[in-house]
Length: 290
Image (cartoon, rainbow, N blue to C red; front, top):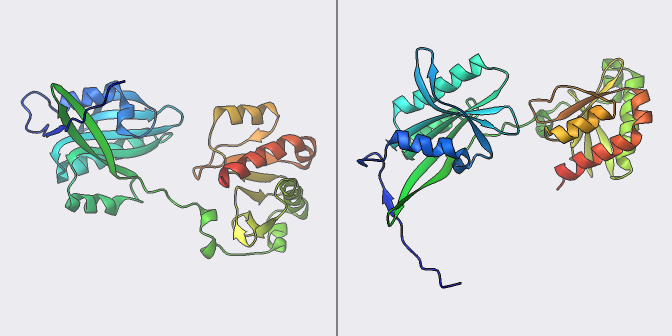
């Protein structure tokens, strides 16, 4: 293999280019949405007509989840119109299709510090990603480089906010659930202790969590009800895992928006499926503590 030669690319302004335009950029992204750096995305639609609001440049969807990205492309500097349009398209899509998780994406050649500050004000309230696009020319070739300059803020989960979570005790949960269902939590924690002996229950107002050496370790949290206990495991939504749970004959509930796999358990199931539950909880433990 010969010595590689460094070639300095030349930055090109697409806004001022005589041939390359927004439509060209749109087609490049549509052909390979992964170049945005947002994961394995699939093109759902382009130039998507919005009621009384123009056309959405690109609608992309994550191949492994129900997350959709409403993408607005802008050549040159960001301006008020494109920011408003991006948010407007996101809002229309999320209202029309609430079964999906939606995220607004603004792709621009120059995301100025002023508008970056404005955009950041929305982050945490509106899931918004800002991506700066650079066109680089090398000889007769043009390449596009996408850099995320503002990512969607990940909202904290209730169990991560331990400092403001009201601490309760066992009797609180025996009244809210029953003594029998709280004892089911004991059974599940006994299983956990088989691979993590230092784990202890922590009784909070909204759930029974776990702690290790005085620190939260909530790879699993528990909700004792009147007739069963619900366990929420920090496991991603994966078809393979869901299939295993269903084949084991367990009652798999709807995946939580906070990113947990939820299962409804009775005393009979905990006794009969102990080996499988051990495997499942250890998987959550290892992923959470890796």
